[in-house]
Image (cartoon, each protein chain N blue to C red):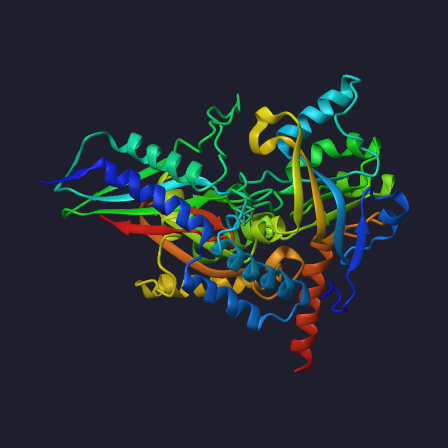
Length: 280
Length: 198
Ligand code: SF4
């Protein structure tokens, strides 16, 4: 067994929380620049210019990229030969969130109870997903997820007969309904298969896939391209006043499912696509 | 740069008088100067509950522009943290009583309900859109910030913001035009005619 002190997890989460909220990934900024170069609507051009300027200002440290610094969603892959020592995982993550959000001047956006709605003040608790994998490493992804795009996400239990076209139609409908509320240009995570509860997790996980990586399954890569084309045909554009790029990318993650089911989930991610990752 | 490809950006000052509000047209780009008020879900619920109970609101609502924002805490030496707009439709249920008390403008992001669009026509008010997710950029145009009421709401407290050149687009005007509906439709039509012309 390889012992890993949970304090290292606290430290990593705190750092990822702060960094991801101030600095967009370079490769992702290039996506925005490409979208600006190919845009033919003056309104959408203006919005993309503002977003690039916003990214420069945030990176300079004046303020976070967006005031919605998100629910702290943390994904783990923990090697089975790792033994976490000196505390429990959930408390270690929350300690990291608390440190990263308070120390980084990030907004506390969590209420302790969905009905009583009192702000917890430090953005805890985090939403934590853990996968046990072979090996002795701990891999962490930090995804601060804004409510604007999260609120417009959807899932459905389609009929197997609805098939490929049914999936495309459902994604397009979801994006059309979301319109400007989800802060386009979007990154669209699509979860296919599994069960009622599992498909949305696949969709969220799909958002973690590095940019510029193709789906290894050719039929899913083709589906991603077709969804992207159909979504961009909507003409919603950056900011929602009309334009070429409604979505920058679509990622599909699939899983086996029941013979009678076709679960599909669409997790919309706004242009403030903040994700940080580290391996311990 | 303006919504119609022209160069003119209209300067508007607060309080926003009804006459100016009525002149603004969907698609027009504006820059705002003066005091605006930050209020989102929780502050709206309290504002409207107070009005219904016959209490005097903590701010003068006449000519007021409300900004749907819950900022991040300011970094040392800054007046405010990141301060971009939140989704406006969540405030739809509160709009009518506020417009009836003299509010002439709202700033947010995303489309409004048919009831809100109709209320804008009735009261001669406007809905302005700022760029969602441009919180660092928009914070740069805020010169002062002060909590006016309900500090216990944290980011949701009612705040007065002094802005200079705060950029926005008229998203819905007092004639019933809605840029969120018109813009994408116009874009699709233009694209289609380009493709046909090819
Ligand atoms: S949807 Fe994203 S970019 Fe828009 S306000 Fe929310 S977190 Fe920010």
